[in-house]
Image (cartoon, rainbow, N blue to C red; front, side):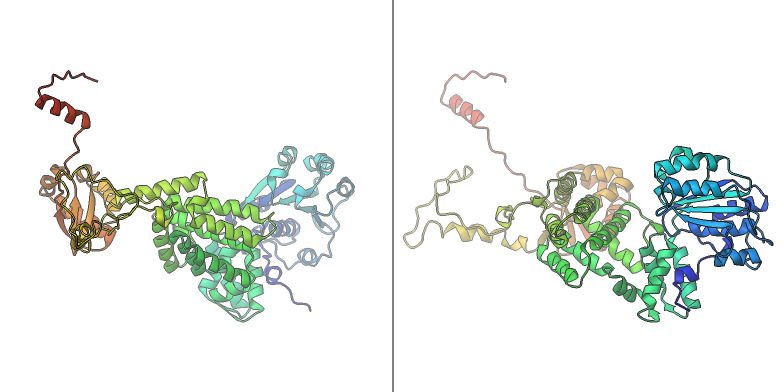
Length: 556
């Protein structure tokens, strides 16, 4: 005998064997047991969820000579005849290839004949949404008032394409996507019966790739079994040609670091290994969807199907990107997926998407602009100088403690704050060489010991929920690290008093530890008041009064 595919060999033969459709199965078994059968059923749902299988089981159950609690016995002559196709009382029609009016007219002429061996004539019309408008009209009257010995079972994956007149004449059952855990358990059971050794991670990966369709999972298992009897997650990834979770994490990390060269190298590596760019884009979208869920939900549960160590890695990456950054990447990838399906060069489309993600200046979409605003806000809240993510290295602002060299042309004007005249230059030195070392040496020592505490914004978020008074006085503050001490920079005079009241100091320390993972010593950094420059108009009025000139002031 020829080899039989696993999804055909392990197709359920009773309602009790059907996985993941408990509500539908219970309703059908109760109707059979109570003899309350409908004349027309409509089974709808995504592919591989058991619609056609349940239709065949229903056809056997209503004709079975010895039904068992609503299930067919699979032992009587009628059940065996339906299984091997020798009984003509059950007819399965493929509407995709028999969608014309003539095919439905022939069916309408046949329904008047009584069944030969069973109790009912059952017509299973698969992919019924493929029927033409004329065929639907020809079926209407027969579907509404068929003979008492006829049952119609319509199956479709696109119920929205059916006319309302057809829907109103059927009893509808919706088949849900089968949960990944249920599919993984079924895959493990089939593998054990077939003598295959499948690891739990591999079974879960097959369930994720099947996307709720058990038939697809068994087909993938059949494909993996052709390579070897021992099947693990790496084996499944290699056979199905999918990108590993680590590779998707690497390319996402390159986008976060704006490493265009690294991201393009990963895309080229996948392209050289015959990876389909459309499938890569789809898998990357699924990975970013998991990051979106982990960034939004504290306990994702079954929303994210992955190993615990993978979830921890994705959670850390989601925190680095932020929700606006994740949504921006998802929007770019969704647009890229649409272009990949109609583009000339899929590799070029994918590389264009990577470059847009690595350089925000190339993307002017709404999600990209929101991501840039989010980046600037995070920089301001953490005490760092905001940097324009679209500017080049030469356009970025120079740090305050960086040593600079004055430009020779044109000569810089003396600063306004220098009231005293500049000293006469020495004949042994040039004018530009003398002041530069003195100015650079002043901030050199503290700059090596202090650095901005970039996570201060996250500490403020925690304080906003746990201690509103502390958050109120620290809303406009920033913090710096000096050795093992965290120095808080604020001009609010109430902060010191509030810190010595109750357990506010411990609350602040615990908030910092929760974010940074380190228990720092706390301190208050003294800020030097900067003398504001005097208004030129006020200076002119003051000079006039000293000279005895009568000056009339106007209120503006």
